[in-house]
Length: 325
Image 1 (spheres, rainbow, N blue to C red):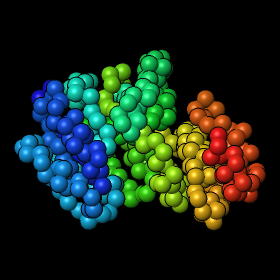
Image 2 (image 1 turned 60 degrees about the horizontal axis):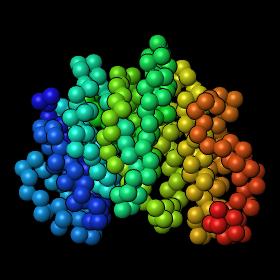
Image 3 (image 1 turned 180 degrees about the horizontal axis):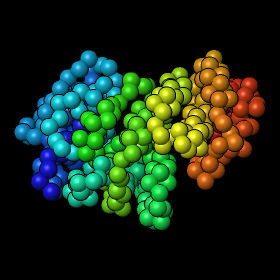
């Protein structure tokens, strides 16, 4: 319990939330940590907010705007901790988060994953994640690959996870330069390296859901979802080669999540571009290998959207059906 933890936070125009995020990290019951803040070329007042904190455990770096993956990698390269946590600049840690995560580690453990609470833009609780079923199912499995398959479908976002630094370094695991699904790609890299993972039902963080803002963030970057998973496929990890249902199912799930965003595009041309790109990606999926147990979207709705793609991308559907639903 005396091991140094490095908490790495990339910041880009987060002046509204970064103060609460930093406070939640500095006020941990576990004190042996360093907070590495990487300012990714913010143009708002984020740097001014950060400068108010004088805690000696803070390391501050600035880079020209290059994206969160590069910022996280920079933080990792400058970390001194034996354990690593990647955290987002608009979320908050429970006060005992670091203590609960690090207490689960032993010599054989590479990653510890905990629960999280979803909150709205004002910090009001929406829902809690629930690992009870996952933990129960994990204990009933005997084969390591069965366990890793189950863990492949755990939410990949990093805020509720702690990593042993040596595991990441020895396997050369880094965040890839992707516009979306960097977290998914990073998490699948980890699983592909056959880690020992523990789960805890303790709540680790408050994950902020920015309501009503998705329409302002949606862009053709959604097409990077195929690139994110194809990188993993090309790495030929035995876990995914020996059980191709994992990546095929993940493709279907994550392509479909992006498909659902297409009516949010105000520009019909971009809707059609995004839809065309995703349709090409869907055609490469081996549907016979999908594991229905882990499909998280309505397959019928996806099929209808793809068949009637011109209608799905139309202004009539967007205005009179999608936005009113």
